[in-house]
Length: 300
Image (cartoon, rainbow, N blue to C red; front, top):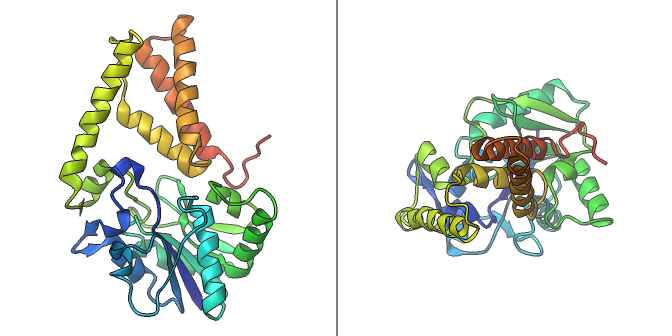
């Protein structure tokens, strides 16, 4: 089955202190190199990200590079930019592999996606689902015609800037394919990187970010006379990350603010203790964000 590939490599990497993910090293090669290897067999490949030495320097001959407009407009906008670059430069292919560059084991999941498509010719694509049931739209193979149709529809209405990938794909008839364990493991934090055996020469410097966040948290708590309150910074950041991925990026601070406000209200009326109220609020926010605009989810 002929396909082109769109590799996404242009996020802000905020929770990595701004260190670009494509250049992180796994098993002796950059994450971008691993993504390019995972896309082997594609008729054409476009990498969507900044034209920095860390990206351009590892691109084989013939690989295109594109950039979403505006920069850092999110993965849905990046997919659109990749499709546009392919349309302008190469012959169309029936299928498009969409792959984020921060999943070092993504290649394990691509075979099962193709197998699913061969067994279900009526669908418009196949999306990876992790062993624990999490959908990962940035490891998927989609009908090029269907993707182009949805990009055009979105561009004609609300646009794709900071839009959710789930929103872009919501009307597609997709097959959910459970992929091998670890296929969708991605790198959002240095803890993720360490768990996957991923390294970067700037990592030691970025460790100070954790210390800075802890100090800033203490400073804020003192300012609000909340010195006795325990804040799980990693949990808060994790909820923000889920909101950014499942909704739109600006949803991250909004979600954590509302969750904190709800926890404060619950504590104020004696509904729960500080730790319990915060944990419950973050859990609910995480659950709602994960479900937001997933295929089959209705919202008002």
